[in-house]
Image 1: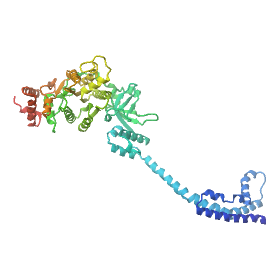
Image 2 (image 1 turned 180 degrees about the vertical axis):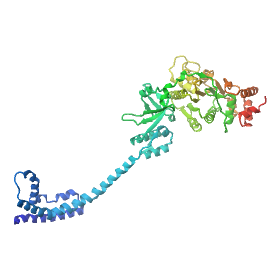
Image 3 (image 1 turned 60 degrees about the vertical axis):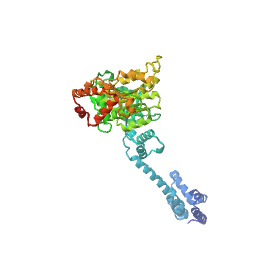
Image 4 (image 1 turned 135 degrees about the vertical axis):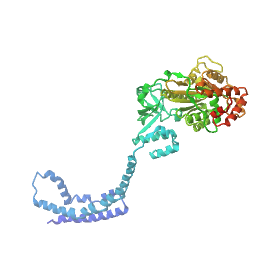
Length: 552
């Protein structure tokens, strides 16, 4: 049996524990942190009792088990003391098992279960968003969308601050966010090869201007597929890596809308055989502007491969006539690829042309530098040549070749030989080469260029430019200022307009009828001839009906 000395510490510990229990109750009412409750435990008192010593012996039993054997009486006494101190007193059950510091504060409080549980539920929602497969995006289709549609796509991909981004930045952020979700990306554009050997795919929607979503092509890819400036390329792309600024092409899928393997068998444009135009582009169609196009068919027929000039003084309706020609080509000849090039034009005319014409409209407004005019014109011409090399038909409508020649006169280095009006002798070499590219190809395909030339502007330079291009075209359509002042539209001077080798474009019977018509109209004044022709055309529904109604 334990002696009196053994029972005294137990009584002292019980009194001390009552104080501890009271202090813990006060602590729970005051909602003090757990560290305060730990300070009130009688740690120093328990170190003097036998149960603590027994606990220390348990830690040292493993070390001393081989030194001396232990008797059964010692074990029973220690178990009894351990049961009295650890099993039945308040320190064992109350403090360690059931008090608020053990279970309530550490196990069931908001710090333990509520806050940690809510923190675990939030990542699950993000994980669910990441598990959604990312869509396959096409850069060309994104550029064609409106900014409202791009904003909604950016929000769906988790892009922040959408309202402060421009259209180009929106497209860039959408592709970047889609790449983070391992989504497939496709893109394309027209190749522009720089002097260092690498190139970029420019977008026609941005008029081939450098922009953040341009696609990089390495020199090895350019050499592998024998790519040239103006090739239209599409394929799979990747986002920019660290210290990179542009998207990169990783797999070329199509070149000029064909497989990449066929590019090596293409004959260069310069080696193709040019011939006279022999396939006609019919301008006549239904609508309010049908009269203007019917007059063009009768006076100056246009064929595939035509090199034509629309000679126009200011305010004679040349831009409207160019729009009508573009709409007639897209409606009557859908197999022809149309490109409208506006150089040094007004911004409102660019918007009007873009909305009224279904083809590709490339522009460079008058507030841009001359180097920009030259760059746009060269990109359009190189693209048209690459398409013709594939055996397709292309029509380029240029407004105007006079302003393009002015831009080349500013950009090209001066030779020291100045012509009349301040025009450099070497300034017209590249504009003339641009206009001379129009031709009908014997091996297949054609390139048609219809350009406007300004006259009667009061500038001698414009007159010199027109005289330089006057003999290079094989079709001319002259607009008359006198007819435009009298509000007679189309203001076409029939006697000055015509097409070379028009017998290749017309049926012999049709040609004979038109010859008789011209002879009759040349006997009267230009304004009377145009008014008479418009009156007779309004009485019939088509040119065939009109020609059949003429007397022999």
